[in-house]
Each structure stands twice: as C-alpha cells, then as structure tokens.
Image 1 (tube, rainbow, N blue to C red):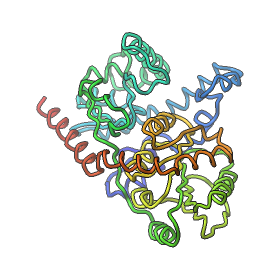
Image 2: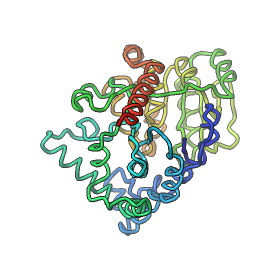
Image 3: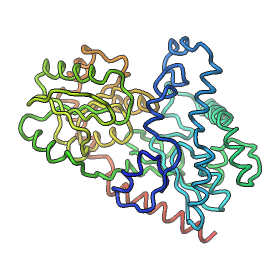
Image 4: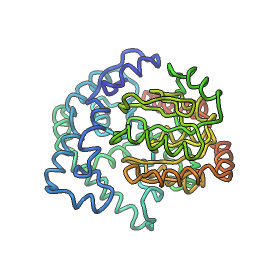
Length: 394
C-alpha cells in the first residue's frame, strides 16, 4: 500500500506490511492556502470569488498543489506494481494510477467515497439527462486540462502515447471497477441510474480502537448521554474559540459535550463533568452512546453517525462535505451549514432541532436500513478478488 507519509504509521497499525510513503503530506495540504482559503479555487460563494485579485495566480497555485509530487508518485507506484494482480486507487490522483496500470497491463479498480461520476444527485440544481451529461463531461474535460501538463510528463516518462481524451473517459471506457463506498440510502435510485455498473457496497470502516476508548466510555457512563463534537483533519480557524462556543451552547442546553480534537491544536482546555476533550475516539463505540453528533460532514464520520442511529449537525468546511449534510437533511435526520457561518445562536438552534424526538426516531429507522460494516467489507473484497482473477485470465 502507498499512502501519504503522515498516514504510514496508521496503516502499519492496521497490520499491513511494506507500506510506502506516497506523495505529499495530506494534512499539510489540508492546512495550506489552496484548500483553506477562498482565493485558491475553493470558493463556495460569489463573494469569495470577488476577493480573488489575480485568478491566474490562484489557478497556478492550485495546479501546483494538485500536482505536487506527481512524478515521484508515478515512480513509486510503477516500482510497487511490478508483479501485482491489480491496482486499487482512490479518487485523488486516479490519473497516476491509471497510467501505471496501463504501463503494466494491469486491471484498475477505484474506491469512491461519494458519487464522482456523472449522476443527477450531487448537483445543487436538478438537470435533465440531455443537459446533465454534457455538463459533466465538460467538467471532467476542464479537470483533465488542469492536470494535463503533469499527466503528459508522466506518460512520456513511462513511454506511453500522449493521451488525446480526458482521463476519466479512458478510465471508464477501459472497464475499471469503480466501487462506491457509501450506502444507497443516501442516493436512492443511483444504482439504477448507473445501470448497476458501479456497485454500492456501503461505507468501509476498520472500527479500530483508540487509546482513549476506556477513558471515553467511563466518562460517558458517568452521566447522561453527551453530544459529540469533532472535525477530523479539517483546518478550523480559532479552534479554542470554537470549543468555548460549544461549551457555552451545551451549558445553555444542559447537555454534556464530548470533544474530539483530532488535528486541532486546542491548548489547555479545562475539563469538567460537562466537557470531555480527547484526541481521538472510536466512532463505532462512542456514537451509539451519544444524543447527537456534530461534525464536518466527512464521508466516514457521516456513515458512522447514521449507522449509530444518532441525529447529526454537519458544520462543513470544504470539498464534498455539503453533499453529505444535504443528504442528512433530506432524510430528516440532521441539519447542515457552513462552519465559517456558524454562530453561537445558529449552533444552539441546530442542536435544538436535531434533539427533537422525531429526529432520533428517524435516525434509528435509517440505521436499521443501512449496510452493516462487515457486509460492506466482504462485498468490496469479493469485487476486488473477482477483478484480479479476471485480469489474470485476460
């Protein structure tokens, strides 16, 4: 397995041997200007774009960030894949993996944690099919052109012919297995829309224990069920202020708060019977014991909350996180807003909303319908083994 250098130790802790550092530090990327600032192609509103003084500079910076380490990743993966049966890639840097698979003549598989191929579910406004596909194709083409200098250089280094069509089209038409690691309850009808070509297996999770699990369990059982707050690896401005806001809101509501600091530097935060701060927590163990969950809207955390049958407040930061917040709202088991637009009053109102009994009842009903973790893992493993077997036969 090849992963960002900051994840090597985590992967090794899961028991996988021979883990390779691959590309840039992903946490450093998240905390960089290109991800966290509106002048770097992550603008969410028109007013953000008005703040761009030089769009060409923003594009250049975004391209540099998106292609950082591209050549090194290609060399690493090319060496690793010799003698392999299959290459499994994620959505990010899928072009690198596709070119290496083509070089070695190997089957390619991808793991998507939200719908990234043409579909009618993720756009902010519905479009008819005759408009949807051209719009989606144009978006894929512009993305390819954005990355094309790095991909052209990679293909030259591998001795492959220069690509004349967008990367996604080559991947799809090449018959790549595209496993969808999320549950169809979020996107009913998507399997039919894709005519079964992209299997939805449900969210994948190791449900690994953490060093704080016993401490968390003991604190939870010492009082009424708390509200969980966590923002994963997301860059959050003034995290100490956010903790103070959380504490004030929970005090007014008469609720306890379990805060998972994750990658945030919180400094010295006083704990009490009402507030507990831990660096990490096993979501599968902690979430079912909580009244509500507040998080950034990451795919994995969203799935863990839904499986736990607990209502959610999504305070999204970037990327596809608003999509998950919107799906929870559609299901009637959560609310959603941008983290930077969150205030003490809005958080108070959102929590009062999801703490209503109807939200908890619906959350439990949805939890009973989603795919169980072991089923998701087994389905993904079977699909990969079948793809590798077919690749050997070919």
